Each structure stands twice: as structure tokens, then as C-alpha cells.
Amino acid sequence: MAADNPTLAICDLGLQFGGLRVIESLSIDVKCGSRTAIIGPNGAGKTTLFNLLSGVYSPTDGSILLNGRSLENVPLAKRVHAGIGRTFQNLRLMKHLTVLENVMLGQHHRTGIAGTFKPLVSRFNRAAVDEALRAIQLVGLHRDADRLAEGLSYGMQKRVELARALVTKPKLLLLDEPTAGLNTAERSELLGALKSAVGSDVTILLIEHDLSFIGGICDRVVVLNFGRKIAEGTLDEVKTDKAVIAAYLGTGRRGREASFAA
Amino acid sequence: MSGYLTQVAANLLISVILAYAAYVPLATGQLNIGVAGFMCVGAYASAVAAAVIGLPLFLCVIVGMLCAAAAGLLVAISVARMHGIYYSLATFAFAEVVTAVLVNLDAVGGARGYVVVGYFGLGAIAAAALLVVAGVAYMMSTRIGLAFTAVRNDERAAAIFGVKVFATKVQALVLGAALAGLAGSLYAHHYSYIEAQNFNFMLSANAVLFALLGGVQTWWGPLLGASAIALIPEFLRTSGEWRYIGFGAIMIVLMVLRPEGVLTRATTRRLVAITRRLTATTRRFAWGKA
Image (cartoon, rainbow over all chains, first blue to last red; front, side, top):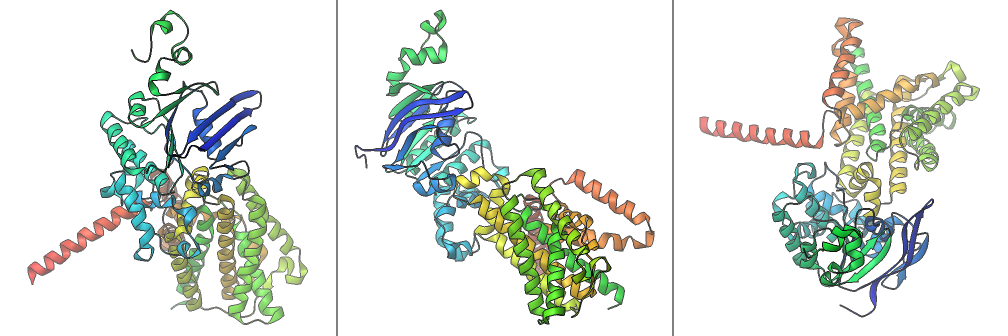
């Protein structure tokens, strides 16, 4: 792992909806195996950046290179083949499928013709079922594999999303606010699941608001505001960065007095 | 079996096939309200293959299915990127065009209808219905079914996990059209006479109702929906015209109480669990007695 060449190279990226520039001249290099957090106030363009990386939107300017390969002409359904797996800020599980079936959707792009015609959850498809069950076990849901997703708590559904992203065998894992809506216990469970389940060869890009969660897993933080990068560095560095404090807290007297450390 | 019962059974079995013709596209979220159009193509193609070319009946059915599937492919390529009401209107328009063309086509009898040679008895229709139910049930248990469900639930999320959404929707509509063609072919060779006007919007609406009322979350749903809608009016026959009011009332109550269809995935699992518990209790009781 950890070759000096970046896994992900975002270069002068721009996205414009009509007259509104949502992402502007954004350049980020993410090294192989690193864990990078993307933070910023609401509307900073964090999820939009993930949507650009996963192919939901096409950039109006700039380029995205994954392992040296441009993603420009790679359509949405092919990004997962390129090694991009993701979770969503708002849960996008198939509610009336079981946990196992939801996770097995993550294997879809790797299934050949023979696998397509086998009954999904059966002894004829044992290798795929076992692989999905291992991912479910890694996120601590092995007792719930046969339950319908609609009957799970929010925190458990978040973990199903993580397991589904993991079975895509990603090179780049995009986690969009994985702790949103979780209580403290669920956050620490998720942190544990992430540390144990994600190999060091997988690069993680994480959108998160919980700084203690970021401190527990990420080695670098990139801060966005109005679609632009305003700071980059370790968590401690960005917490004391004036531009970051101004973006979050404003530039008035209270903003100058307050800080993330407080 | 009496003539009346034979007709009720034939009607029920053809309805079951038609229910799956509507269900397969619905499983990917496509509300095809032109099912009758594809059935009409299958019926006429099969009838012409029997009368003009003189093909064996089995091959006539294949011809009917293939022609309906080809029509399905043409429609699917044009409309599969549409959504909601625009998609449904396009499939409705297709069915209307098919009917209008055949009513004015003298080569197949025009408005007078077309006498069909070759006869399918109840056994053949039952075998076809059984094959359709088993085939769709198997397909829905595979990755194809998973892809269909994913596309119905969330097209974007499905695509992010590598499902080719457009191709999946095209496959579903073509397969649904082929099943409607099969229903049309069996109908033509059972009733021995077809009229394009009979393949109207009411028939499409019924097919969609079979699937929606039964529920599209499981492959059981359309079977239950078609059986209920085909049989309830027959059970209520003694009440004369009132039966339609009773039937309508049952429909409204079900739609209010079960908007996702009678059989959802959760309901099916609960029913299976209850059946298992009952079986276990019965066994224990039987052993205790012995």
C-alpha cells in the first residue's frame, strides 16, 4: 500500500447548474490506503463531490483520475467496476429485501452469466452467499441477515449500507455521513466495524460532522465551503484554521472568540 | 367438467398468465397499461400462423410470443427512459394503435373478427399457466429478480451497484410482452374466434389490477390477485348485478387497507412463520396422543 502516487486525483473540478457554481476549481489528491475526511458547512458541496465521483453527475470542468485512469467517460453503472463503492447520506436500502439480499446487490457487477441464473440465496450460490455473510458479520449484523431491512433500526440500516459497499470490493470507499442519526453507542460500533472491516488497501473518503469520529479514523481532513477547498491538513490543523472557523462560525465577534477546540 | 366450469377455469388460467405479463414490468417499476395490445399481437400472430402458414399449434404459440416480444422490444426501446404517467400513456397509445390497425385490416377480418383454427383445451392452458408461474417464481429468486427489485426501488442506487437500469427495464417489458403474447395465443386457440375490439383498455386495466391488488413485492401476489378477481364475481353470481357492487366494495376496502397489495414480503414471512408454528403444534399434539 501507500505508494506515493495518489489513488484519487481530483484536478480543477467544477460543476455548474445553470448559473450556480456548486463545485469550483477543486483539486484534491488522496493517497492509496489513506483515510480522508471531507467537512464543511451545509451546502458546501460535499455530497455533490461524492455524486461526481460516483458518476451521478458529470463535471462541467476538470478531471477525476482513479489509479491514473480518467473517469470522464465511465458511466454510473460502470464506476463500481472501476472500484468505487459508496454509502448514502439518506439511506438507500431496498426496504422489503432482507439484509443478506441487500448486501448481495453489492456483488451484482461481479456476477457472471452462470451466477445470474442461480437462485440468489441457495446452496447453488454458496460462495456469493458466504462472502456476503462475512461482510454482514464484519459489521456485526450476523444475527439479522435474514431480517427485512424495513424492520431494522436506523443504525443497523447504516451498517447494512456499509456491508453492501464493502462487498463491491472497492478501491475507493465513499462514506457519506455514516454517523448521522446514530447514538453514541452506535457511533462507536460503526467506528469499530470500519476499523476491522476495511483493509489497509482500501482508500476511504468520508463526509462527516462528528469531529471525534473523524479523529478516530482519519489521517487528513479537507474543508469545503461554497464548492471550494478552504483548508487541508490534520484535524488539529484545520480546527485552528481561521478560514475554517470563519466558514462555520462567521466572522463577527462571537466567531472570533469561538473555536472548534472550545 | 361442465362447460361453465371449463370456461371459468380457462378464464382464470389466462388471467393468471396475463397477471404475470403485467407483473414482470411492474417488478421493475414500469406500469404497462398496454398489456392488451401485446396480447392482441400474440393472438393474431398465432392465429395467422395456424391458418395461413399451417404451423403446428405449439409453433403457433411460439410465433405469437415472439411477435409480441418483438413489439415489446420496439416499445421498450422507445419508452423505457420515460417515467410515471408518460410511460404509461405511451404503452396505452401502443395498445390503441394495435387495435386500430387490426380493426381496419381486412386480411385478418377487420371489424368482423377472425376465426381461429386449431384448439387448445384446458389441459394445455393449465400446463402453460403452471410453466409461467414456476418460471417467473424461479426468475425472481435469482439475480435477475434482485436487479428488477433494485430498479423498482431506486434506479440510481441500483445503477451505482452496477445494475444496467435501461437494459433491465427493456428485458422486463419484452418478457412481459412475450407472456401477454402467450396469453393471447392461448385465448385465440381456446375460444376459436378473436376480435381486435376485445383487446381493449379494460383488459389491460384488469391485468394491472391483478398484479397490483395481489402485490408486486412477491411472485405470489399476481397469482392471488388474478385468482381473486377472476373468481370473486363468479362466487357472487347468485346476487345478480349486485355482485359488481360487492366486488367494487371489496376492491376499495383492499386498496385502503393494503395499498402495497394483499401479499407483501413481510405478510408472506409472517404467514410462513404462523404455518410453521401451527405445524409444529399439530405434530406435538399428534405425538402426545400417540
